[in-house]
Image 1 (cartoon, rainbow, N blue to C red):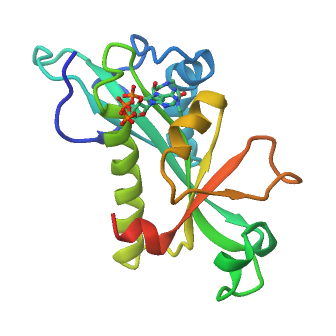
Image 2: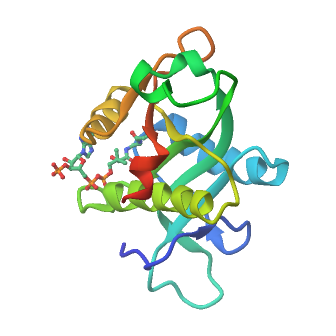
Length: 179
Ligand SMILES: CC(C)(COP(=O)(O)OP(=O)(O)OC[C@H]1O[C@@H](n2cnc3c(N)ncnc32)[C@H](O)[C@@H]1OP(=O)(O)O)[C@@H](O)C(=O)NCCC(=O)NCCS
């Protein structure tokens, strides 16, 4: 399965969600059942990279996808060096909630491509003055995901133990804008 070149918003009738398999039941289940509902409800937005070579009119299989939303984090949850110049009230962030690559496309660099696409989208929204944000926060679903994200040394742990049950990492927006 070869990907097209552009990420597009997940579409109910143009995209085949059911054939997607990244090897994680939790992520597969979210994508099959809840990604569209989340968009309809306005709680998160899913961007997908469709497969190339699909006959006209047929639903496109999906090579990779990610979800974005926004949230507030507590000022105290940031480490001192990141929090120093920021006001002492809840701070706006982008949230990269989930990211996955189909097993047929894994190991070919698509995980990194997908991740960078998500960060650049956040940077564009922020630079165009459309959405204020001090960082991109990533929800880390499991140990594999932690290993994948911790390869990026710009990620820092976010102290959110009292508010959220998953570990979270963040990258300051100044760093994201330089990507
Ligand atoms: C994790 C995942 C996104 C990686 O996708 P991928 O397309 O195989 O990754 P890439 O080919 O772009 O690999 C990029 C790098 O990440 C590393 N990597 C890939 N999967 C990894 C994992 N599970 N743990 C640690 N490192 C991993 C690769 O070795 C590679 O490193 P290198 O550049 O030093 O060689 C994919 O395996 C997946 O969807 N897994 C299930 C869902 C999941 O765990 N998502 C994580 C975020 S919620």
